[in-house]
Image (tube, rainbow, N blue to C red; front, side, top):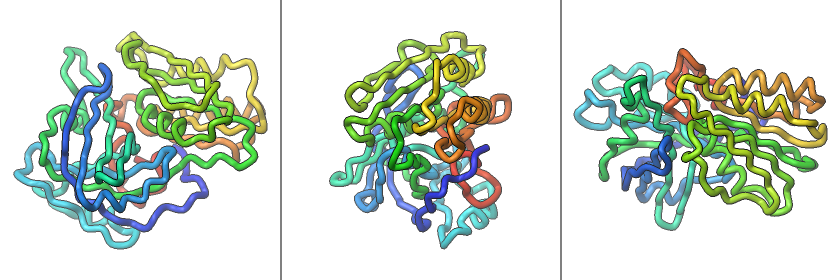
Length: 289
């Protein structure tokens, strides 16, 4: 798991909101749009700005927001009884319209062997009804390219696609960019708002039994060269993140120019989440959830 970058986490603030709509974006991605007056004040920073999402569990009759005070919110959250403690998952801002107080959340739809939707976040997203209450806890950004970066390399599986899309949208128009983006199927490719000249390599996995991230890692290892004056952002399944970083360091990219984060671990966490579940301890970045 990766540590946080040197960027400081924002002061804890909970934003109350409600579901506006939920629709399938691609075969493997559901977009939930949420809104509310409080979201007009959400301090969106672009790039991979992320947050903790709280919503009602299926066995609960209504939503109970956790208490947020200072940096110890997780302790009262974990102390909440099962009957009231909401589900917690971590996501990237997929789209933000501050004037309307609207925010988009892209949730990976993972399916089991029989085609059924798996994972608490994916099940919730696909069934979310307008008006359903929820809350967001701002967590800031992890992306931290140095000012002198000669170029940017982004590597991710589908769980990192919202972060990749947000970073591309935020980069300077002339920034050289290479993207290695793994997705479950070719139909999950979509248009991305990227700098002119950006090279986006879509890597469809196709085989539902393959471990997500393995194909993106193979593509990273197959690159001809890595610019030691560049910057790399590698996220997704834990092996992709950790082995991707090791490869880049061996290839000559300084550790200080790499941001990596294991959003989930194959065989232990559900890959239907953008960033997997709550850590039983203080937040240290997406690599811990």
